[in-house]
Length: 152
Image (cartoon, rainbow, N blue to C red):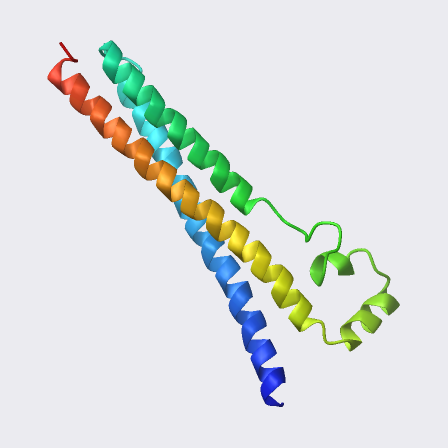
């Protein structure tokens, strides 16, 4: 195996691992956001909250819902759009066409496509983390307002 061949194999493996890591982080954050929303609902549904706490808490819940939507879009399957490569393409080919396709070394193209998918997933995750932090902060402020009895 020459240097280019081993570098292509390593890069292909690395980008697939990045997608897996990002999907794992996204799943964990989605579970956290869901638990935070469920906990917020459980605490707030029967409480007599002052209007400022409701407004700030509502904004926080809105940001958490936006984070959940971003997370769901990040894990939504992306089969490569109009010109898929690798696995999605294989689903459209006959056995003979798959053999012909695999005879070609398309790893560089796969790496490019998978890298674009990984970056999109990572960007969505990053934005969702920011929204989660902002939403959580607003929920903390709402709780402080509620404990303090509202703004006079």
